[in-house]
Each structure stands twice: as structure tokens, then as C-alpha cells.
Length: 79
Image 1 (cartoon, rainbow, N blue to C red):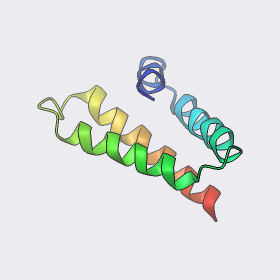
Image 2: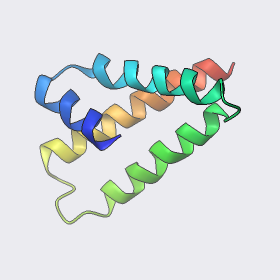
Image 3: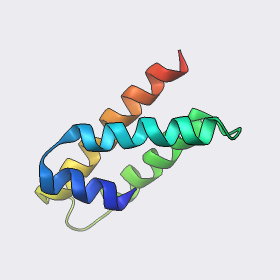
Image 4: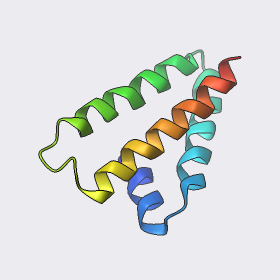
């Protein structure tokens, strides 16, 4: 997940991460996992980022925003 977050940030293109999240969801749900597992994992990453000493860093805040948007899209997949 972190490599995709980094690439998304470097290219300033949110669609890279959201496309990755959708691809990952399709891959894992076809193998019996639930979308909620990915959402939970993204939430855990967000929590870890909140605890960083450099949370105010622009890149870290962007990662949190990317994860939030991916979770929003994944939640729509559950409907």
C-alpha cells in the first residue's frame, strides 16, 4: 500500500491509489476476502500516520486523504 501511496503523491494523481484500491478489492474478494478487510487495513494505516511526529507534513496528510478517498470508494462497493 505504501508504494502506491508514495507514487500517488509523487505524481499528484489520486486516481492511481483509488484504482489500486479497486483492483485490490476485486482481487481479494474474488478469493473470499471481504471489502471490509481492506477498509480496516487502510484505517489502521491512517491511525499509524496520525501518530507520527511529522503528522503535519504535507506528504503524510496527503496519504491520509488518499486513504480516506479509497475507503469512501470501497464503501460504495459494499452497497
